[in-house]
Length: 375
Image (cartoon, rainbow, N blue to C red; front, side, top):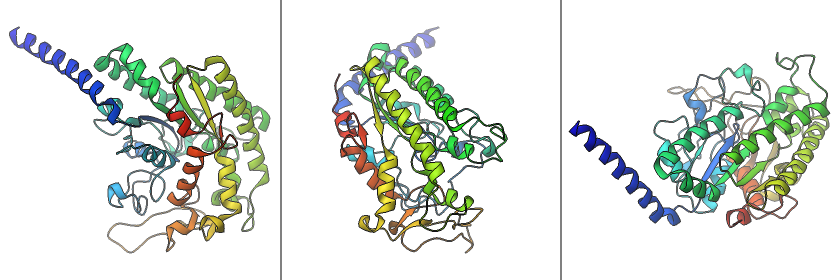
């Protein structure tokens, strides 16, 4: 009985000390971010599930300095856009993947990354990859993190803490890729019209955003879908000549992005000024890179640096052997890392545009203004 009292007293002391410690050090943590999305921002969650969508082997991560060039589960050669944005605002480390061991405590410091490769807005997206964490489940995971925060800080302090954090949502690409692949059983030959599909996507994403808002999120970055009609994978399966993009694919995505922007504007009217939703126009930034790649210092905006231009598009390097897929000599000269994802060099340009861009690329304010935003 005495031992139980001692343990209870210790727990109470620990929790009180933690709150005081965090209140004292909060200004030191310049940037707290909760990241949701797909492989464009996955920081390693898929390393902890059974899935065909993994980036846990070389040469992935070859330019990621914190790991010494070893794979971290990021689907690129270096940093993702969310990594770069965090560093721009003084983050000394990156939000760890939620599924990694012992990440809960970090939720009170620098945030957590919930993103999962092959995931989508729709639960069924990515089914052929077996394991993935759809956006609905990612938010469930955040709810578990929030419960931990409440235990440590209390409800009031948790709400104050979350009010200052940035919530980024980068998702939708896989939903469109699945839509344009007739072999996907879920969509099959009976898939809905493009217009209905856009509406279905926007309405589902809106539900998820409102749920995050109910859980305490106030500063949102919602990234539109990029020009998938220009990625090497689509160019290859559509048999497009070098330098050409699929107009059909890009037009559908632009229609979705326009509708998404409109919904976010309505959310700002309904839930602002206490909450603010930024639409991040990655589509136009990326199209500018592809159309003027030489001006940005690139030499190739068509082929991927790793994995080749033709199926099966696998980027790999076997350990202990000399076997590997094709790998370009200079990663900084390529727009695409593999058949689906940008290089770190391209991610840096996109991130810079979103941080300090005008309303044409970040609406109604840019990320730097969001960081300083106080309702």
